[in-house]
Image 1 (cartoon, rainbow, N blue to C red):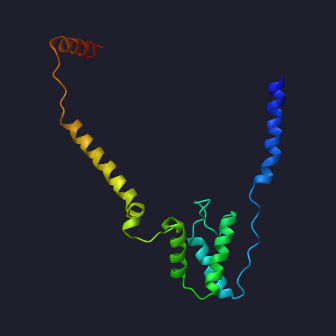
Image 2: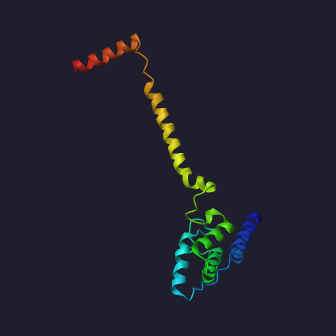
Image 3: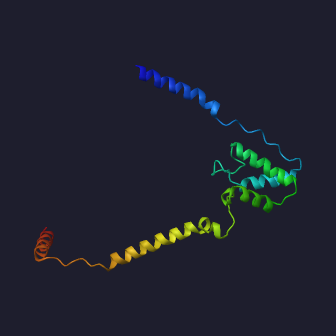
Length: 159
């Protein structure tokens, strides 16, 4: 009985403490006053990966860091930086993975060409296995197996 009460108390505590431990919602975005700059910022938002969610762009992510990144991009656009300068700054801070399309260089070859190399390797393994199987011949039938086969085929012809 005590164990059930303790489990109930722990569950109650966890359910009431969870909202207090949750991340507070981010402050609302403040769009740039220049519509051309805001359009540029929104285009960049789609190219930048949320470093928390990792499968969403910062335009779609509700995470607080995504809101911070949107604010950072807007600040840098307002400061007159180019898109490439903004992306380079984000790569410097968070690494190549922050962009949905990381730059092609020695450090990112695995990201760009790894899936193709893996598929080519799997294809080669399948081809080599098929070649090995194709060259092996079945052993000849024994005299007993030939006699059983003759009986079976004779029954089929008589039927």
